[in-house]
Length: 107
Length: 118
Image (cartoon, rainbow over all chains, first blue to last red; front, side, top):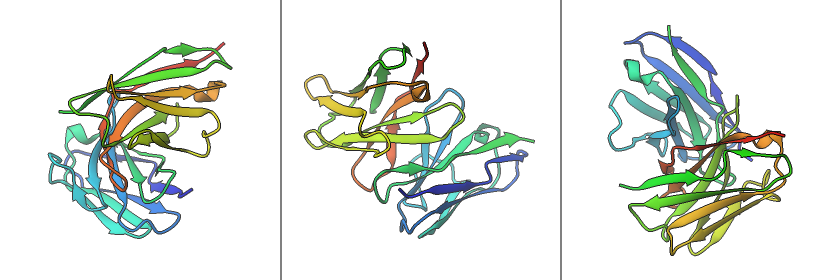
């Protein structure tokens, strides 16, 4: 299985801050990485696919970068609705695997 | 707009068999990849498996011996069966769609909490 390691596991930040979350794959996954946002009681929502492509309707403050084994999700200016848990996911090979999640909290 | 809705019991006993269904509206289930994913308390998301293209399946090796995913195209539903439950299977279970292989998950159900307790 491909292991996905996110850092940090939790993060406190303020509205307006720039935030970066990283995800490392245990082997090369090319660009087959997605980022999801999950708010309490809701299903995850895809923000970024193929490492860098924003899903339709996702605000432009969300961006993704990376390829191979190292990936980054950046939120350029945090908004109140962005406080959530973020997951990376590889879909390069089976089994599909997720990172353990990054909890983004209000400072 | 594609919508998915899980249904099934919320409380199970150890050793029992869990059966969950996912009803899909807004599109046919025939052309896509239909997944089951769970989130256990205090843990991240875990992919259970998917069904696609006329009933072909792939499962997570960690659960493969206990899992069956099936579909019913006449009712536009797909289902999860998980046998020999233990407390470690307590989780929110999600059904979800992938457009195809090497695609991310684009639609999710709201999730169904299943608690396994004696």
